[in-house]
Length: 176
Image: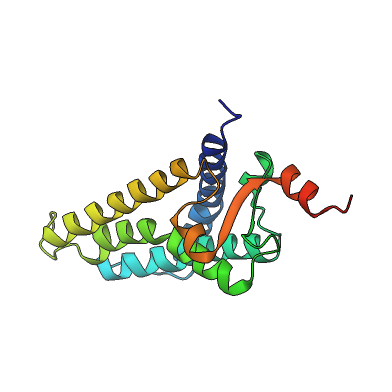
């Protein structure tokens, strides 16, 4: 099962997101308490999520792609690496593009559940539309990963990157 690049890629992402959650959630609560920040409405809650989770997660993935040669903590555990399709390191522009697209479903869920929540409570049409679009994107992203045998998702395709075994990349770039 762990021989499957699709499963390893999925597990690497889960490791990264869970690790980030356990770091960012307590940090966010500390900042909220220390700064005496009151979340009074859905817009304030969305802004808090954006600042405490979305942006730090985006920067984690961008820095991992650009500075750490496409290796996150999760990818390191599963011997994976993201790199440019041309075989080199990922540029800063490609790292941002790749990860903005990767996190788009995540952000659509935040928008749908918090920013577009009706003031009267409950769930309205915009909530369903946003959540539906987020799930559709996850389905498309997953289908793309399956179709490329784990090498690319839609964010890799757009950013001209791919994910493979670290060993394969080292062998490819090492002179014979």
